[in-house]
Length: 407
Image (cartoon, rainbow, N blue to C red; front, side):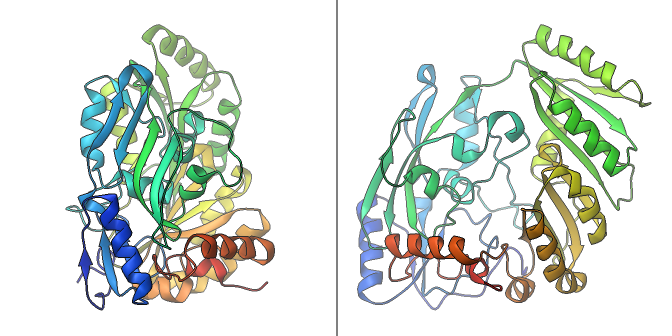
């Protein structure tokens, strides 16, 4: 069995509702019977997070489809179980896209047949390289509908961004990993797809030099839509890439200015639109990592000026995205156990976090997936969870490591 793509078997039960009323019934019945539920969409991110100890599976793939799409208003409402492939196809017909560039980690987690869904993307708040310009997934979420752990259906937000009192529910649900509610529908902003794009690539830069270069360029008024560096301990030469998008004339003008800033480096290469799109699609899905069942991948969020030294200490190939503020580093399971405590302590001192994006079930059980929270942050998180799911029905254990560690 592939220990990344699969988890331990459930005690029993597989519920696949096809409407909100059925989701309400399943969750209310689970409360009455003191049973717990693991929320499941397409299966691409089931092993992202700590192990869920659940009695039954709540399969949300039956709630799929586009409920409302108004291209001229740049808004779309979709059911949470809708495959991303269907959404990309629908948006492409109108030359539109999700600006936050959602990644697809099915192959990374070892299950190429799994189906990436919009609910999973929003529940994990996953964003691709364009985050440096367009913001995160949560910045595109206008409204959320779902069923909380009490079995109560709710909706919040709408077709435009408005000030709200109390909880900002759409932002709260985005990145909650299903421990507060089962999402049923999501309303999102969409954007016109760029007409043209170009990527400037520099090879063989030292990681620290590459990070300084990206940081300097991102501070200039060039509207850079992606800045990434493939480095660390790699078998091939390092690659630093800068992407610009928009109308052709604008892209060419900005490209010229960026080239002037890169003239100190030799071997600067240009990637045209098709080649550029292929490069960034591969990077956002982390296809540069060659993974097997035992491979582990850290996802680090930390200040750019510390990223290179932290990644170097882990000793594996690294992908520095978002100009270096998000770093993915591959490691082996045997070294993971000895690295985790020291790494998380160092990351915490820098004000960042270290999460295990990919690891075997055994490693996640010993190390925990997420950076531990302490004190007031942990208390607030628990109060929120109890407010939405007082009986711990939904995804119990998914965020377990958030409560680990010293106070």
